[in-house]
Length: 141
Ligand code: AMP
Image (cartoon, rainbow, N blue to C red):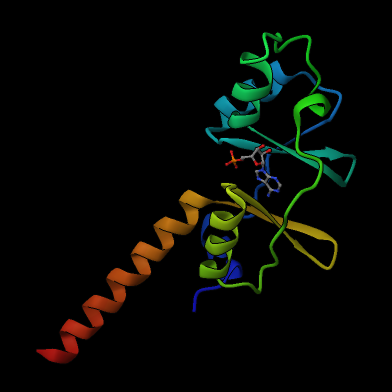
């Protein structure tokens, strides 16, 4: 069973983050330049929240707020759900599906070691399945 550690070895351990006092405009700009849908909100080296495109559409656009005037802390989710690198990718996909989230920071013994998105997990699961099918086909021929 593929673990989050194996996935991070492949995709890298970069985590894009923003300060809670920074503006939502800067957060969205950073998401766009890094081509990601969410940022971890860090106060120094402490995780204090997570902000995703969904927070922006629901809590800024729909509420008639403006992104340069709204601080990240006003719309972030403070109760961050995390994974550990020993968990399997299937377990993490289950967590994301149950919690209706698409981003999971990876924390080992209080140390941030990466971030995975639902896209990373689905891509890896499809590749793993392809490999299994090829192996079974080779055994059968
Ligand atoms: P997403 O589907 O990842 O865009 O996130 C949907 C909602 O869940 C947004 O309000 C996010 O702030 C929140 N969210 C995303 N990832 C997490 C997470 N790992 N822990 C807690 N909340 C999250």
